[in-house]
Image (cartoon, rainbow over all chains, first blue to last red; front, side, top):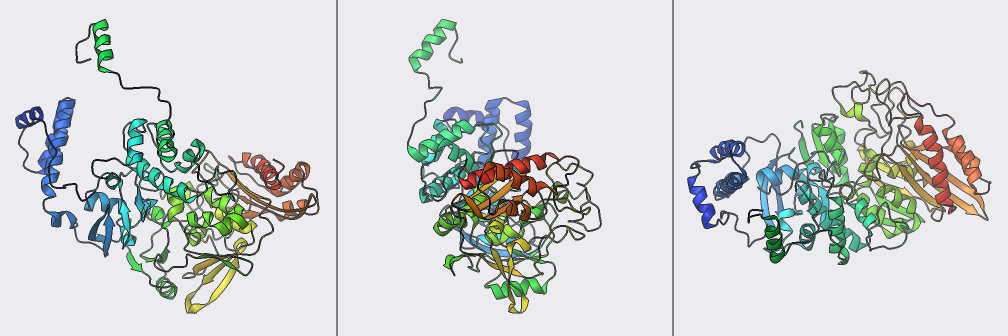
Length: 275
Length: 328
């Protein structure tokens, strides 16, 4: 998270959304929000779903107003370890159970839920973050070992409103579908590009005695093999990393439709504006 | 995960003392294997001694060869100019293992210390003599497609999953360790890991509390003709079904020295003296490589589901030697 990001403010709502939100039951606490959230999600449509998400974000935002409560563990710690580290540029100090892995510290204690828990045993890559600039698995890193380290999570990749080039390329090339593995894919890709810049070799590098920096698509596939994507967005992921690396644009098989074109098609098929 | 005491060691002496004092204490380096096993309740230390502040991560020229710090990361080792130039086999073996993230975390000493293991070792609902001595071997009469074909015992048929050690064995590396009372000794990599015998719970020959401080590589005459071949179920990020570290010294078309080490076939890296003897003094040719491959797998005793590894192993040896010699 960057310094210019205001942690305590709620999401911006349009007038329509504000009006709709007022019709929803009042929320008194997060537990209430969760129960209402579940009920409405089952009963309601997508619009309600989206609004409930927004409301939940607000409720959590209200909690964040008291940072002390946030950083304190819920129960007594068995083997407490004090750790001071930097997360996305901000100094953090917390006391953790010796068993707590960095992944859980980020998600449960520092409220950075962008980093995802997939397999929780080093096989899927969803929890990939950068520690001192290197991509690692936060599920197999004890928080206690991060004393003095600099951690960058997916929340820390963008500069304010400006996406990291890898993030922008993932959007451009559809490098995701459900999005669950994406934070890990992004952090892994950012780490990979640094490794390539250093001239690191891989399993598919033909001659490891020569210095290589150019990434072929095969090199990208091999170097990203620690990040599994169940949706199978691999072609988009490879294209995105290739462009971020070489600036080479990949021919796309789709494009955004122009307004006039859309109107013409609607007229042809006699559809209204909801189609 | 069970509770454990976390200790950040300031130096090697302190780290060794801390672990030596507590029979249930373990060293923590990259953590990629031990934390995974602790989450699965397979490893149950009550104290972890973190080695990350010890240094011991230097890679430097030493006595004609190279000394590699035990705590240097796998990524940094594979990509070090001294290693890439003089020991490309080691580079290839390291980058054939795990994933980019894991290689950034894993250390060289930790890589050697990873457990020899199979699915039954991980599954606490199943018997496993390695996890619980005397409980039996689930794999022997179970699903044993990925298991050993050489050197196994009735007690354990697991294979050593590492790649780095296979290359280190071919390159005649030695492991430098420090024990309690400051005792320092060196162990040839080939004698570091053990066959299962009657004590499969012991993967290696270190005493409790002994700490790996460095891996030493002698000057090598194999840099020009070596190749690490890994055959697995998918193209990347999987353990070897069969791996071959092949290294040759070729003079005027004839093999002067040879190393053939197989991975994925035994409880430890499996060096074939028979294959090497079949190669030395002979022309580097496909025909001779086939004879060496036959010799390497001659003693193989496959289990119910892994007879394919015998033929796969032979073909892998031939291909690795062909690539090493530049014939393919």
